[in-house]
Amino acid sequence: MNAILNEDRISTAHPVALIQPGVTQGQLADFLARHCPQLSFNVTGSARATSLLGNALDRGVGYLGPRHLDLFGLEVVTGTGELIYTGFRRLGEESPLAHCHPAGLGPMLDGLFLQGNSGIVTSACFRLQPRRPRHVAVSLVLRPDASLGQLIEILSALKREQVLTGVVHSGNRPRGRVSLMHGVAEYLQQHCGIDGEHLGRMAEEVAAAVAPGEWVALGGVTGTRRQVQAALHEIRRRTRAVATLRVFDEARLNLGYSVMHALRALPWARRQAAAINAIRPLHGLALGRPTDAAIDNLLWRFGRTDLTAARLDESNCGLIFINPALPMDGAFVEEALRAFEAVARAYEHVLYVTVNVETDNSLVAVINLLFDRSDDAERVRAQRCADAIYAEIRRLGLEVYRARVDMMDQVVDPSSSHWQAVARVKAAFDPDGVIAPGRYCP
Image 1 (cartoon, rainbow, N blue to C red):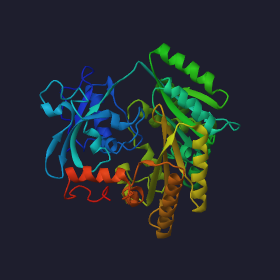
Image 2: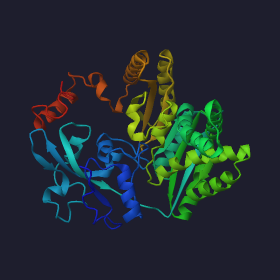
Image 3: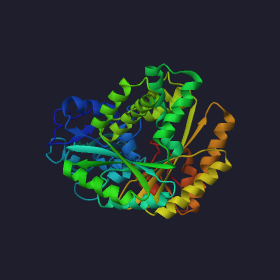
Image 4: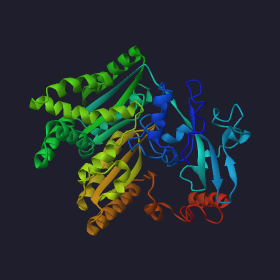
C-alpha cells in the first residue's frame, strides 16, 4: 500500500497526488524532484519515512498549514467490509471530477474518518503546491525585555493578513537548541575532527549562539520578488520592538556555508559553518524537502548516532507529546505555558515547546517530554507528568487537538452527548469494533 496511483497524471495543471497510506513524505518529495520539480507539498518536521495519510488523518500540521486540508476523495474500508468513496470519487476513477473537486454532492463524509477510527483509509487525493518564484525564511529572536504574548499577537495579525504565508513556529529555548545539536555536532566531528566531551561542549556553545533568546519564531514568506520584499518590510516594521529579525534563503545559506567551511581553521568561521549545517535542513522543510533532522537530534541526545531515523525505537529515547489547541490570545497563551512549565518542574521535567500559528483564529502547541525509557522510574515519572499537564489543560478550559492512544480514557467522557454521538457514528460503520475497538465508545 505504498503507491502513488496517478504518477503519469501529476503536473502543474493537475497538482493532486492519489496516494496509498504507505506513501511517505520522503517518497513523494523524491518523486516530485524527479518528475515535476515545479510542485511541492505541505511538509511536516517529522522524518522522511512518515506516512502522509497517517499524519493528515490525525490532523497533523505542516509548514504550510493543517495537513487535513490537503486531503479529499478518500477510499475507505469500513468495519463491515463496505467500500466507501467520499466526494466525487464515488463517480468512479475515470470521472473528470474524481481527483479534482473536493466537496462532492451532499454531506461531506471525509471528516468522519479524521481521528475517527470508523474505517481504514486505503487511498486519498493529496493536494500539491506550485513552487513560488521566491521563498525566504524569517527568524525572530524574542528580545529580553519583550514577552512571548506580545510576539504572538503580532505574528497572529501578520498571519491573518497573509503577510506570513505559512505556519509560524515559535520554539522555546530547550526546543530551539535541541533542534540544532545533531547538525552542529555532525559538522564539528566530520570536518573538524572534534570528538568526545569537547564535541558536546562546543556543540552546546554553537547552538546557544544560534538560538540565544528564550523564544525563537521561524516562518516563511513566498511570492514574487516584490511581494516578498514588501512582506519583509512590513514584518520588520511591526516586530522590531519585540524581536530581532534575521532573513535567509537557500542561496545565502549555501554561499555562507561555502565561505565559512573554507575558513573553518578559524574558530569563528568553524562555528558559523556548523550552525549553517544545522540550519539548512530545517530551512528545506519550508521548501517542501522533508528531513530526518528532528529524529537525528533525538538520537544524538540519547547517544545513538549510529541509528537511522527509521530505527528510533531501537534507542532508549522516550518521547511523550501533549498537544493543546489554544486561542489566538497572546496573554492567555503565555499564562497557560507558565502553568504547564510549573507542572513539569514539579515532576523534574523540562518542556520542549513549539507554539504554531496554525489558522487565522487559533494556535496549537506541541509539547514534548523526553526521558530514558529503559529506566522504569523515569518512564513512570514522565507518564505522570504528562497526565498532570493534561489535567491542567482541562482546568484551563482547553483540549488537545491530537490525542495519544494511552490518554483516551481521560479524553472521552461517556456521559457527554458529543462522545455518545461519536459512538453512534462508530457503531454505524464498525458495529463489531473491528477497527480500534472501543477507543471512542462510552
